[in-house]
Image 1: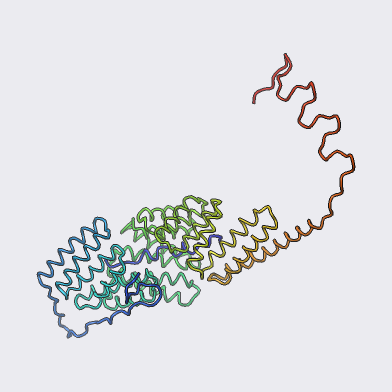
Image 2 (image 1 turned 90 degrees about the horizontal axis):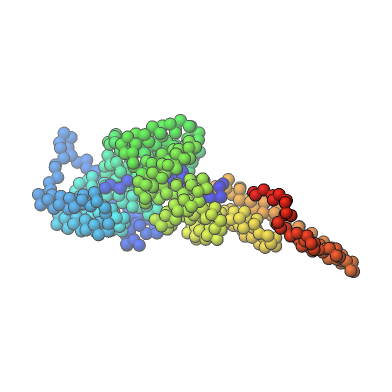
Length: 486
């Protein structure tokens, strides 16, 4: 286990960034801490159309169409420019007015949610999407509302709830691209968590590939689908190196369609990491950050890669920016601590590790890094041996606490080895201190003897020239050759 305890972050990067949106939480919301999400509404699949007959065309009045199109023009203008809270709320208000004037126009209600969603006003977006998902009207827009609710719940950490809504969206419209990509993305994340040794891993991979193949069957130019597909094939490459070749082909297909897609750049970075080409990986991670400065996973990967290169100032800058974007990003505090430790700021490193520990006491990385900090960077540098015993004791306590936290068994075995090493070191120190204390006192000096190091009687003190001698550096005697100048 590396002392930074962050290698797993790179392997799971860009999962959240690849989620596709289709275009303090309130009561009944699924965005609050803990708890579950509201159940999705029953999906009504129309099977009542007689064979050979066409389903009646849905009629929309001219006034409704005109009002909706006027609001849509404003939305598209903001989409081309830059959204801010004012423009998002203004767009939502315009569509809300259309929805109130034409209650059957589910399209307008969906756009209310999407307008809020553009500015990450999640509480308002959730309420609007929930209302749209329970209306009658265009089944595609209802499915889109369900899909976007799944995306909101995923980002709130409600993974089971997100999957419920995405499955409902696909049931309502099997050709819905966003929901299928998001399900595949969620399955990719689960594949990474359980590892390819689990029998469930193969099922997850097959279902992810099924969903992505369906997307490409509907939209062959979906660079998002190609990107996720490439990431799926990167998993399990340790057993089958050919998977990396297939992953590269899929990423190259995405590149043909949108070369500057930031999650694609990040995916290329992951590919090159697996190939051992760290400089190329860093270039792609940096390109992803340039393309989207708020792309947290790409910033994390730049920070981790530069940490490996010991470019601590750049690494520190990246982790600080991640924390600015997401103050609850546990791994960023661990990374920042490692960067500060590399910059010899041990107090700063300790403060960051403790922030991570307070953020999620169940995880073990902070405890392990605190143990390393006290053992290798504090105790081993202390001149006072008695004081170092207490510092080693603190390190040992942190390693022991790590053993009770979430972590890999291999990492826990390493922590046990560290505890054993500390015990040996402290035993040696205690023995040395004891031996020193048992040493007999030196015999007193004989009466009249000159103190150690004193000059003999009549001799000039050390460093003082005898009378008549030329002082050091004095000019040479006339006619003598001066020494050469260096």
